[in-house]
Amino acid sequence: MIVTPWEVSGKIDYDKLIREFGVEPLTIELLERIRKHAGTLHTQLRRKIFFSHRDLNWILDEYEKGHKFALYTGRGPSGPVHIGHIVPWVFTKHLQDVFKANLFFQLTDDEKFLFRQETNIDDSHHWTYENILDIIAMGFDPKRTVIISDLKNMQRLYEIAIKVAKHMTFSTVKAVFGFQDSSNIGIIFFPAVQSVPAFLPSATSGKSVPCLIPAAIDQDPYWRITRDVAPKLGFPKPAQIHSKFLPGLGKGGKMSASMPETAIFTTDAPEVAERKVMNAFTGGRATVEEQRRLGANPDICPIYSYEYFLFMEDDKEIEQLRRNCMSGHLLCGDCKQMLVQRVKPFLRELQARRERAKDHVDEFLAEKKGLNLPE
Ligand code: TYM
Image 1 (cartoon, rainbow, N blue to C red):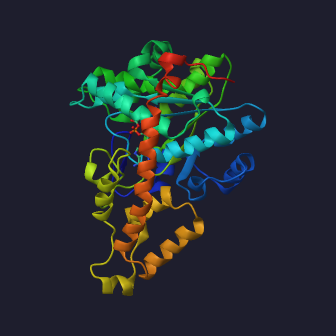
Image 2 (cartoon, rainbow, N blue to C red):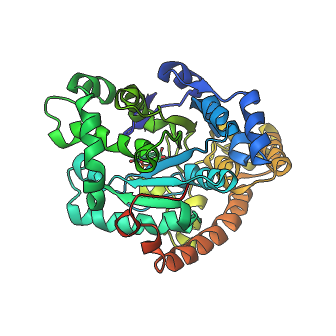
Image 3 (cartoon, rainbow, N blue to C red):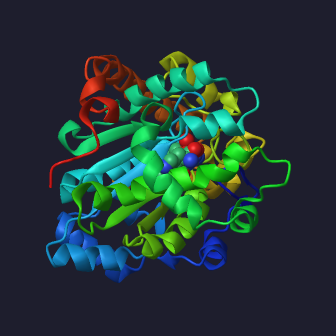
């Protein structure tokens, strides 16, 4: 198994990741504390899609003392958004709604320019704009959200970035990210840039504000080094809550934009998404007779995962789906059709929201509104 910000491959063992990354599992006690404040437990928590954390108990301690936390999440805009990316965004929106939290949303267009040989600056700007439409379409509160493109706002980030960089050595980033002597010097500096928004809630308000970062676990290496630097700059260490990966439509592996036939993009025409779903791997049996007799395995099936992660919110319904799959009651073709019936209206609605978002972009941009959000 390989899990880095740039590569996720092999069979992911999340318990092993918890040990290797030195993070904490989300315990029942913590979930109950969240339920107490949120009034409900979000599907992604009930289903352990968000499964581990750092310092979430501290975030809740502070909240209970009356210190609100801010949220920070992001996107590296190298192409269209797929439905895997929106897994942490759906949850981030939920946290913003229930905790009335400010959100700093970073678009690391510099990262994608630096990391991808084939990407030019115009591509980076183009995908930043396109991805901003998806972010706005998620329904974040414009009063409590600021979207920061690194390329457009570096002058607002640079002072903190160089303070961070002064405390990060080349040997640390080499060890954490696998950089080589042949790596370009831009990417060696870049981890300092991704640290900055974790400190903005405190830096912009002039007091210590806890920051919580929801993201899939691939981003964790950034937070490890950010947390080491935080006290040296007088900022609180940012806390994290980590999600699992939505798989791609092929056999194994996370959904990734680099394999477009196995990803469902938010901009895919509903009929294109239908074709992709109908062609997906399921792990079902070779014949109908075998499937009826032996049943199939939902744990290796991306179709089941999409229902589980995003589309089928009712716990009883998902449990029934699981049973029907394992008992051979449900055939893969019918199951795919059921998903198609959910994915198509979902995409139509999201695409309509993306269109409407075009009139609201300025309400979110750091270059228009600055970085200060209300208390
Ligand atoms: P990026 O663009 O690779 O991914 C954006 C967000 O989506 C998560 N993610 C997934 N979640 C579930 N299933 C998947 N298959 C899947 N693929 C990606 C990522 O963990 C991420 O949360 N360097 C970052 C951009 C960034 C950022 C941040 C991300 C800057 N600051 C703060 C999270 C939090 C990047 O390239 O993300």
